[in-house]
Amino acid sequence: MSDYSPERLERALLDNEPIVRAPNPQIGSWASSPDRLDGELEERLADAANSLKYNNAFLDDQLRAILPTDLIVLGAPTGMGKTDLALNIATTNAFLGKRVHYFALEAEPRELERRTKFSMLSRALYEARHEERFKMNYTDWRLGKLEHICGDFNSSINARFARQLAPLWTLYRGNKFDTNDLRKQVTEVHDRTDLIVIDHLHYIDAREDQYEAKSLSDTVMAIREMNLTFGKPVILIAHLKKKEQGSKRLVPEIGDFHGSSNITKVCTQAITIERCHVVQAAKWFLSPTFFSVLKDRRDGASPFVAVATFDKRTKSYASTYTLGRLKKGGSDWEPVPIHDKPDWAINHRPLEEAA
Image (cartoon, rainbow, N blue to C red; front, side):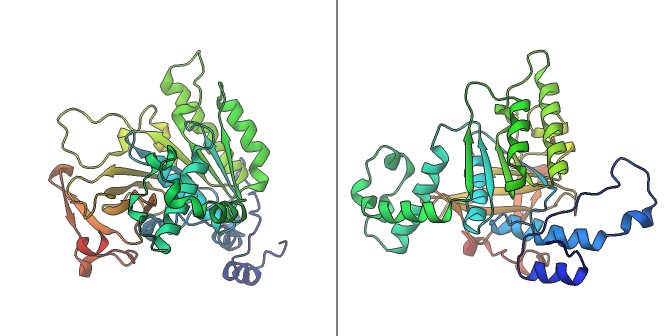
């Protein structure tokens, strides 16, 4: 749209109409603050109209939305489910018609598509109350051992996949993929995407003439530059350092991201997930998970740590969570009473209800 009047932008926001974000012509030059403020409302409403959802109860409550210039760093220990969370964000936005480009730099070819199809199949079996739905698990399905259970659903799920996930594009890396390759690919797709996911930072090849930390720093700075230049949000997955032996900390800290401190210095949000051992899982297929927002340039770091339950059967998180606070130097966690919750914690529930 070309009409950037506040009234037109407000209507577009209510109608969920995409708006092209106009670049700031004053970047790189001096201007008075009153001049800078000119057009602020229009730009803010345009950003709001183009915002995306995490489609995760806790993240949507606390962070509200993903804005066009957000660089979101997502960290977790190895095997904790970084890809599952990122893929959930990507696919649910694609279901809503948002265009997503996912750099699958660690995964084997078709892995993301297989994970997504398995999740859709599992959900279909549970919705149909199939008598053998409880036997669904990704490993046996990947090995072809569950076709007697879900085989009848293949054609309908494949059709739905083709219809609803056309906006999701994936790129699997070959033998080489460095920062220049990333820059080339992002430049090619930036005008036809709404969200970029890079999975993950530590699988972008380092320069041979640089130390790892310097190479990671240069890469994340290049990602931030593209993020700001093109005005498209980026979710960047990153490794965390191994926990020190004997450490009793329940959740990671901002300094636990592996490599360069620039990884978190230049991002707009830093989010971590960690296995929650202090909450007993109600069922074998449920995995209580700690969520922490360690950095948020809009509202600051959060004093809260949420517990959200991951369902291994459908590879998705529950629609509610329990908000809490860390105690005793981070070695204990205490739920927040319902009457003491912040206003934004709409989906916060007592632990027994959220689990």
